[in-house]
Image 1: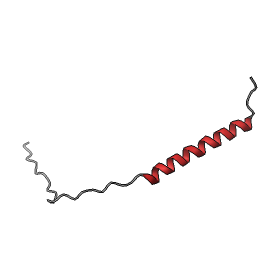
Image 2 (image 1 turned 90 degrees about the vertical axis):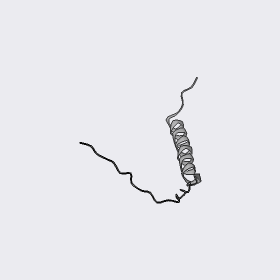
Image 3 (image 1 turned 135 degrees about the vertical axis):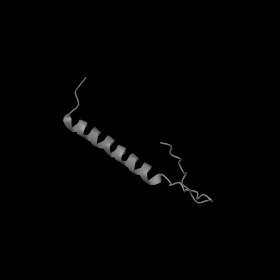
Image 4 (image 1 turned 180 degrees about the horizontal axis):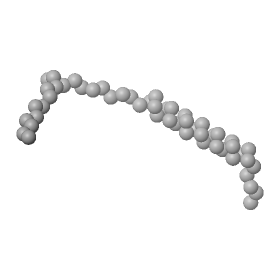
Length: 52
């Protein structure tokens, strides 16, 4: 079984790296942001009763 030439390994590395980068970029731009629903009542901080 013949060994692969170094240029062939470099081509494979560049090819898979390019596919990986394109996959990451497409996931970043295709993700739709979710809208936060505003609550009807304003947020009130809970009062803590400290007993020392």
